[in-house]
Image 1: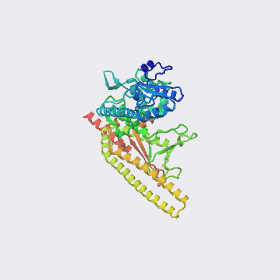
Image 2: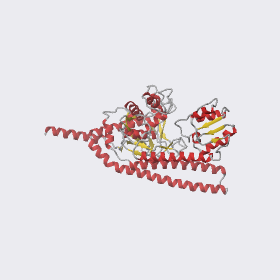
Image 3: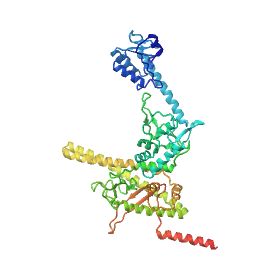
Length: 524
């Protein structure tokens, strides 16, 4: 570690170890680790450093080596500028104090750097060294990001594949055979420095990489600072910061994806769709909710099932042993219902756009308030039951202590109560999140109409169409009171919610009246 001094003393078998670019607070430095390995294998007789800070800036760690490790192995330690020589005992009394001040210096420097970064981040400057995949620094101004079009095209493709119904793992597997360079390989191919080593397979996309891309608000054109933090200046581990601690500056650079695309992807990622064991899946997996308990409906299929046998049931049904009824509906039937309803909605929205806008505007506020009120009532009901279960816990505990009920009975009842309470608590959390989101959400009719205009005719449903138009589907329990099976299905469309389609006769009447009006205008 100290070339000139060592040469002057004519030490034989000299090995010079240098840790340039590493902080003294970090004891995972490559050269330091090599030195300790040599120490532990008994190959070191003498260690020479320029001063104590070069060994390290953590007084406890440094003290462990100088006071315990080195003496135990009879290693001669010298710190030239500090006058430390373990063989003669020079300045050993002051060495711990010197180490402490070295650490104070490192801590003070870390505080100043942290303060500078906080000021920079809150002043609207980027904190990241390199922009995320899809962007590059502006050659004319390094403080600006511009779109890196080849990479941005890959980002857009990843978002489109997600909207088309593919999960991160499926997307990663699809990009590899198409020989799409993964971010690290792409940056290295265009000469951008990265801290990561060159990947063995430049096309082996990782699921976590795809997940990270799908979650970045930066692709909306936003600057997002303080996404990570460190617990201590000594720690090199970055932890995720809660979103409420992020500092976001909107529309700072050009967007790669639209707000509608980003929001749809976040919704899809929240309601993850998993393939069944036989690989079959449904267009509606993750979208269906039970009208009575609010839980998801599971897609049920088997390898030997015909398409007409695939169906959905409430996750709380559990073969009639759960807390809810089946709410059974066939996948094939649901496909016909949704396709027919969507065709009618699109036809009405295109043919009578002004009437459609007026209808949605008039019903949106009342409908949203009604839905939120219902969710709030359910939250209150669940909270009351949670409190009741607390009282029941206390009662059966007292009965068990007084020997009114056996230990086995107590264990069974307490387990049942605990399962029910945890289930209710998770429902309350989910509903409260939905209420908060619903109160903040505004109806965006123009967004819906923009999606409608992209389609001239829809003859069959695809994952892309379903994901672009539909946010959720509520399945009611079937009604068999009349002798015939009837079942309500509520379809919630992205940006506008439930759309009540006009009866066929009313719709035909509107078309007829408009046709007569146009004919009268031509003959006038």
